[in-house]
Length: 279
Image (cartoon, rainbow, N blue to C red):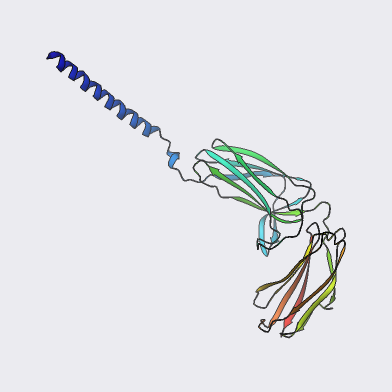
């Protein structure tokens, strides 16, 4: 009987010890669990330096102070610092053209510069210098450059964005348009009548694969895209331009602005504006 009592006491003591150890380790685990595991604070991207200074320029009808003017065949170097209270995960570089001002229109058969790069990172403080090579045959025009950053919990930093104006080093000269009709840059026309534009489009090197666009803004500042025609890939240096448009009977009366744009093979653009008063 004494042996049974002793054995019972030993069992109870062991159960008590196991319970205490379980409680101790449970509390210890909670105490060392990093607060960052539930942290939703966003990481931060800081631009440390770049080899091209930013300027202010009017693009797509708005003024931007984050514009980089870069020549093709050169390098764009940007040093970035990534910082987070949580462990970092990945950053992304995205370069894409903005030829149509993101109106999702067609673009000419050209060679737009394009970059999509994903890089894994570790730690909570990381500095990197990104060197972006720009091919010499890249099309001129407007581009967007965006840097994005994620931590391991999926929190995303505020993106860092630049507008890039790319200048083709092989061809930086805009095409030209010489209008034969109308003979004046300011004319009047009645609703229901035909408006005719004729002339010759030229370029110093090549119109191949380029295009022209015709649009107008009425007196209410509403824009109408009327025509977009692509040149053949063997167009050469000239194109005979002939465009007819009947002014709708419902058109808003008053001063309007017709705009003709010509794009060459390198995507250089020339813009001609004609003031048309609709009666």
